[in-house]
Length: 341
Ligand SMILES: [Zn+2]
Ligand SMILES: [Zn+2]
Image (tube, rainbow, N blue to C red; front, top):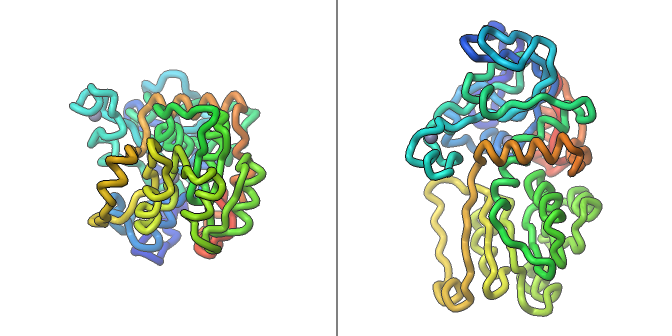
């Protein structure tokens, strides 16, 4: 089968590899759609601490069961399936505290290789984090399950009020998914700051009340102007850029919360004004990844058509032209591309 490997930052290769065979409790999926993701783009640009190279590439997928192996309950060949690429162990220190997203097994056994004709799903993932894809949902929409689960996780415990201002910084897929999820909470106002005109337009159509081109003018000043001088009650940092992390604290209202969603490179150190953090009572949160309950919640949102993610899919490419999709993403064109082997 054909499978794309990331050889080193900036270089991918289409390789011929054997079609995987399922072991006990495992499934082999014929990939219908794999989606490009900001994490993949990051790995392609500068490498990734969780992806030693060369590595099979891609982690957001949907497809049909090609081989159900043995002892897999509830799945038959030909079934349409959606899922994510990790699952926790269920009984470590973190799992016992419902912090399954921090379970060391989750990251250590992360499944890569969705940019391929077939992918084998390990037993724990099959048991905890796979779902039947309803026919109402396209394969590309179904493959959004993973980033949506991350956003569901990051927002899960936030008590957003109806008169709160939500500021989302970043207009990539994660920023846009934050708009869709924030809309459920019906805050007073959703402001989105981003860099790319096309994506900001999309942000508006998905429900942003105000959009700010962050390349023009002073963001802190603009946000103050839009919030009667208070700042935003909720600031979602969705870029993974240290300068934006730094600025996020200044964008928050007194008593506000900053959600630092986008991961920065290891070793990044920032300093914050302690006076501001303490006397303005700013809370910082750094949500990471998701727990099975977040995946289930994300699946429900998609399967019951509670949110419409179709506009986040900007185009389609065959496997052999994956690099063209990455070229577009590097230019800030489009949000997510459907890669269809
Ligand atoms: Zn992803
Ligand atoms: Zn665990």
